[in-house]
Image 1 (cartoon, helix red, strand yellow):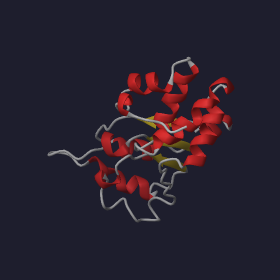
Image 2: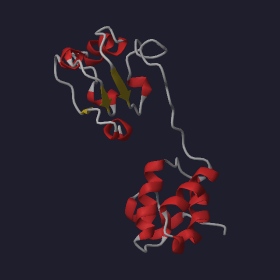
Image 3: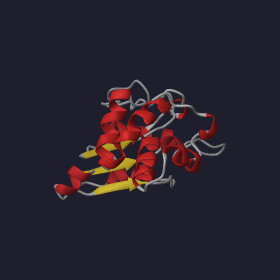
Length: 169
């Protein structure tokens, strides 16, 4: 999106489903980037509506438009089976997995003020006991940069019971 904006290309962020949205987006003729964040939630099937099915033709590119669709999804099991494994519909699938120890160190070195780098190994050790995500790392780095200890940070962020955690440093 940032690269598109740098090239003065419009970026549309779709944050909810409205009946007819596929037709509206299809009618846009100029180049643009259309972002659907957490698609499986905002386009969830209900008893009287199946928004994902409405979007299939749009994602097939049948309108002849020149749009780049970016779709984020946290739970692929909530996606229509017609959206998965269709290279013509979605060309690239990028799965972001939990960060490795090396990635955690690199991320924390990038985000943490140097005076707090001594906590990085503790964060790596902590990651072995939880399902660490980049969202967790972002929040942890922010709190550590405020001067809070890792123990206080984990308790305040409600990531886990920090009282029972032991770190072998």
